Length: 133
Image (cartoon, rainbow, N blue to C red; front, side, top):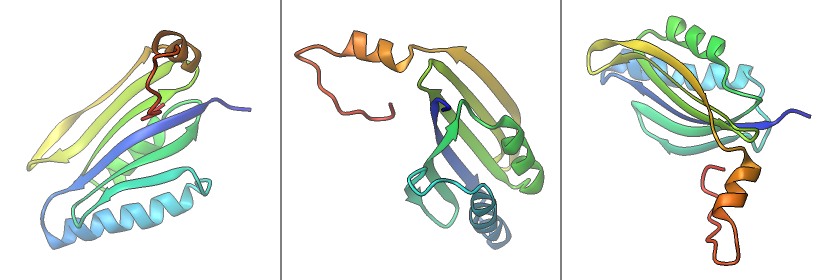
């Protein structure tokens, strides 16, 4: 069974009708094709030019898919911060923002695994909000 990975994603398109449609197509087409489990997609905010969501994946972020999205939807900007319960974390940022093509950044690092978070943040006086993890 794979480790759970939660991706905290932001998709933005510039403010004109064509790019707004591009964002709508990206969301409707690409997420449908990804065949996400029913409880694996949580939409936090959705406007005409942007979407913020949490997306479940196995083991880690799919950087190949994110790079493909940038090629298919060049007027959009994508940011993905992710955490995998075994301790992997990373960041992907790229696309077009504020009228400027942004450099694509892909990076990963080791984070506390979920057991470590419980160890350091747990205890009898802990506040358990479970936000993000």
